[in-house]
Image 1 (cartoon, rainbow, N blue to C red):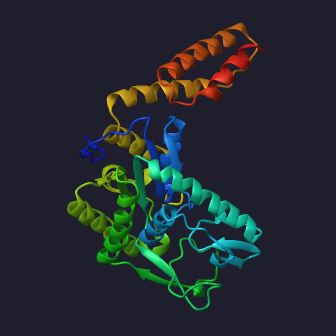
Image 2: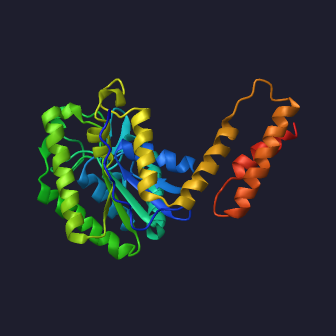
Image 3: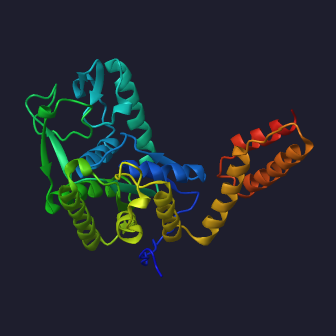
Length: 334
């Protein structure tokens, strides 16, 4: 008896490997995948504007990175004794305007240089609902789409569901500019399986439907995008609240691992998968906490992993295993 519905996933034409540069942007699900990529020694830059949910904020972030936008105090507003940007997550806010601007502009510069040479851009869209600013919002242009509400009063925002054609125009404009900026970059789209229940069940489904339709329409027209079905894997394959956290909104560890393994199968070749397993083994040894670290047995264990890590570093010089090497050798000499 089958307890979940597995379906075939189209494999990416050019698989990802450890020499590629990957920029990830979008919802919190982006960061779940990003952390796993980083853990397996991939070259990753994630969410240079912080977590973003809607297509407008994602597209504006990418365009501003391409244009190397220099943010000034006029782009910020003060609320709850903190300075914020409507285009950034609150992790880029600051007690002073100077502090916020330093974090924002440093991140933009870093992302500009990275995106210029990136091999893949992975975009995870979370919601087609946008919150535009009203005349009551602080220091802004009416109609601006807020990437984050920064716990501002509800009457600062007007809620609106984007249409499929609007999402296509916004994303299409961004993709045109991206293609001119980095002609070799490959774009992967996913829809976040995180359920935006604050919008209501029906409105969450309307929102996901808009995003899915828009991305597939763009893919049909452009023919060079790749769609990874993270949303469908959780909603249609696993399809059970056991795979959600207690809030019934976020996929839990088991669900994230399942999607991650499907992503590996669809987007990595066999050589990369073998290397990932070797790195995972080294990670386990690096994180191992012995009851007695001074035993000869444990020192032999660490020395064996020093030799394994050293050999792997020599075989794949583009990996950065210096932290692991330093730990294994220093621990054996104590």
